[in-house]
Length: 168
Image 1 (cartoon, rainbow, N blue to C red):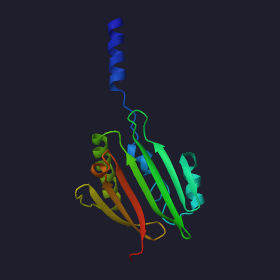
Image 2 (image 1 turned 180 degrees about the vertical axis):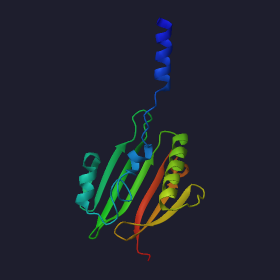
Image 3 (image 1 turned 90 degrees about the vertical axis):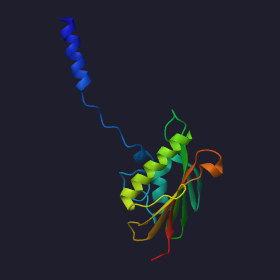
Image 4 (image 1 turned 135 degrees about the horizontal axis):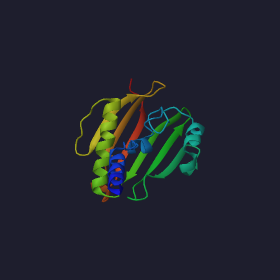
């Protein structure tokens, strides 16, 4: 009887469906939210961005917000976000990612590229540099660049910049 219970327990727990794992990029990018990055869009007011990021703000000036967010504590990866504003609102979002290793850096770079290729159209990578062009919800042109800065920085480092451009 014990053996039958053991077998039934094994079958029950062994066949139980695993809960879907959250997409790690969603935690960084807020991909499930509207906007180009973490629910924010080019043209948003500083107060709107501050409301969304309040728990992460480490620096707040009249034209700039800087946030620091640990992605996970187990691998020591963290990222900084700088939001820049002018009289028309948010015009630059700079994401600096500091992965715990070269391997994590490469995986994050590939994951980001795949995500943005799906969202904004496929682009090529040239020696750790890639770029997309998009439009914000408010109709402004946005240039998104991603660079693996690891070689120049001497440590794993990825830079992603969302920049409002005047190109029509």
